[in-house]
Amino acid sequence: MTTTLEPDGRSTDAPPKGLLGAGYRGVTLGIVLLVTLLAFENMAVGTVMPAIARGLDGLSLYAWGFSATLITSLLSTVVAGGWVDRSGPARPFLIGVVTFVAGLAIAGAAPSMGLFVLGRAVQGLGTGVPMVALYVLVARAYPEDLRSRVFAALSAAWVLPSLIGPAAGGVLAEHVGWRWVFLGLIPLVIPPTLLLLPVLRRLSTPAGTAAPARSRHLAAVAVAAGAGILLFGLDGAGWAALPLVIAGLAGLGFGLPRLLPPGTLRMRRGLPSVVLVRGLLSGAFFGTDVFIPLALTSLHKFTPTQAGVVLTVGSLGWSAASQIQGRSKRPREFFALLGAVLIAAGIVTATIALQLSGWAAAPAWIIGGAGMGFAIGSLSVLTLDMSAEDEQGVNSSALQISDTLGSSLVVGLAGALVTGFGEARLGTGLAVAGALFTAIAVLGVVAALRLEATP
Image (cartoon, rainbow, N blue to C red):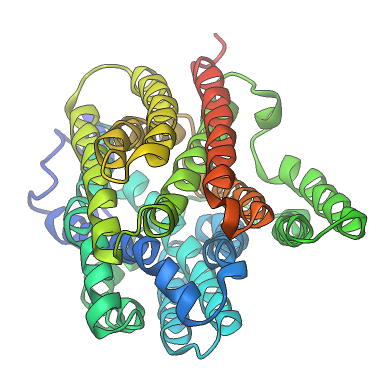
């Protein structure tokens, strides 16, 4: 028997129901629909970004089209952690969704690359808050027996976007215009939001939840500013950029220990290593994923639609592996380690394949996608299992911080490397970036050996 909080706010002792059973159907559909839309936008943007950068004459800001979103989502994720724990998930969720829609509108209507990056930054502010709210919703509305299946369903929500997102983004960019990747999503966000709001409002807030320390908000600003300054400095040239790099590292050094579980940067066993592994694997995987379309369109003269097909094939590995881990009784630590190994192997294989043939990258990237499918859901379940009820928001926030910071820093650093080599030596720059992604993934494998808490 499992004690759980029903979506209608009642506490009950009952055997766990299916995800679409009475009491769970509406909330499950709302979560899956919303994540499907976010996944579609994510998959489509990766495909059309080369066309956006060329159309707005902003290839030098290519990496910022991704990093700006990740950095601002980091800031909003930190704020959301304490906010959701203190006031419940409903209001933060709604404000986050409205902000995300505003970012879509700005990016879709942007006349220049600078304004496009601004729109992507606003999207990031809106993305971080709803994701923390959804994690808390999963923790409070579903029993432990169903949580792994919920995260498997969330990964399954990537199946349709994986199938049509990259290719649809490419078709839109070629025949209608890349702007509709953003503007076309705005009306579609409304139905899942209306499904989830009543459930979110009924969820209670744990008694005794303390207001977040002001130092945590200061740390969030320091980390977001530090990441932005560091990436801006990496884009600079010569010794003049060194003060910016130092200032960025100082901001990260001040803020991160206050936002992540104690011992995260030292790879302490248990929850700290869970959070660290999430950041390392996300950085390595998404760093590679971001630059695959650029390699395909620049080195192998793929159209955006063809590049989208390659990303689609890789994403199917993610969805399939997620379903396997969600229904398996094996320990979550096993799947997290297996995923880390496959991500490292997939990055090596894809990097070599991109130097030889564009189409060879498709089967190679299935390996990396499968690694993410095994690891990400398992790490999410481990985080909730290791968290007290009144710390679910903060720890989910820490997991998202690690995810977004790892992705933004790795993508930004790789972007600086590729830009430094220039278009004439783009192939060499991408190979060096692939070596960087591989090293980070290997470090993720080492950290994944330390997920079990110390007895």
